[in-house]
Image (cartoon, rainbow, N blue to C red):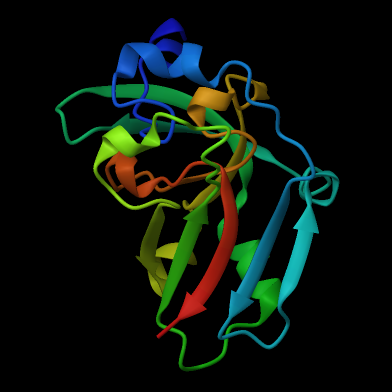
Length: 175
């Protein structure tokens, strides 16, 4: 538990894995919403209280990093496909893009990462709809900590960790 809470890649806060938890500890999540739009019949915007009403289940996945380490993590969340199906994807949608939260005021060290923010990661539609792909809201039975991608993050068990976008604010269906 201490490893996953204190050794993190979250470049918006710091590129030093050992410094992320400290850099993120005072971040206040306020007025959170998750927008689902793009090539859909029913775009939607959910606030955090609506997201937390979605029934969750625990999934235990091996979490892998391109750096060669892995950990077995108990995530709790809901199957991403359940949310995506509510939006009714259009036939031309082939991919799903996940945009993360970014604020220079909350994340002043992000400039040292050398990449553009907000971070956007994508999955093919079939990967996003796979029953093992979840949006996690808890880790080890507690709300996801800031440094782990609070309040909601993507977890794709067959992909490396960088594909698991943290602090998601937007899910967009695209060609």
